[in-house]
Length: 304
Image 1 (cartoon, rainbow, N blue to C red):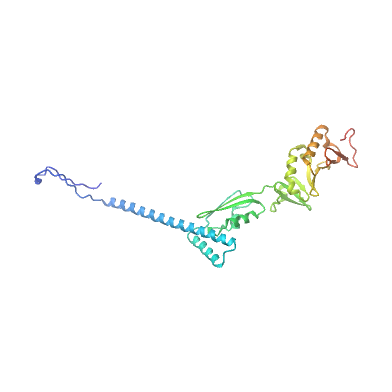
Image 2 (spheres, rainbow, N blue to C red; image 1 turned 60 degrees about the vertical axis):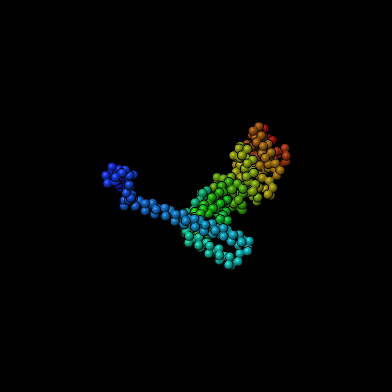
């Protein structure tokens, strides 16, 4: 505490009562030190706020300029001088510390984060302004495993990548070669068919695009689906089902769902799928024609 000196009111030298006098308040060395620290701290905080404000203003201006220049480049209105200016702005942002320090990846299981960062140019120390989110997204979506991609620049030093990978749905057999396809029929070139040998097999031209539709119908009839080994697209118009028994079910072009419902009902009533039939023809609406194997005798009493 500062030392305070007071004058006594009964001092005879005064002759009369006077209000006490206060000595000057003096600050101890410790007090002066605390005050100087407080002032220094506030000065540093003010400098940091000013520096941050300047960097923010520079970044905002640079981002707007880069966006405008990129738009002009995309529309073909950016000449050599404009391209040089864009490069200069990107370099200045890099000098100011706006470089890639982190790459956050979500949704990737088949592709590593390091491969993604390398592909889009988000290597450590790369200028954040040099990464074009649209171009990076296009590069990622060109990968066979990637269905959709989103790339975000998170200033000042982070890139976020969100992926939706394709899910293997079935095998497509074409010219004796098996390919893995997703539910929309897109071939996943990078997928190894041997790894997904348990998936249902579709055969023929145009089969991938219609595979999900037929699979949905078969899901309604598990007894038929369990006996089916191959689903064959015929003439890019209709389907045939190859059964584990070696027989084949010929479906109509117009209403395969109705035909399979009829077959399921007949099997539930009379066990049609257990017949020694080479062909079960359902191509005519409301009719079922069974053709026996030439070298096999049908069981007595069985027929359609």
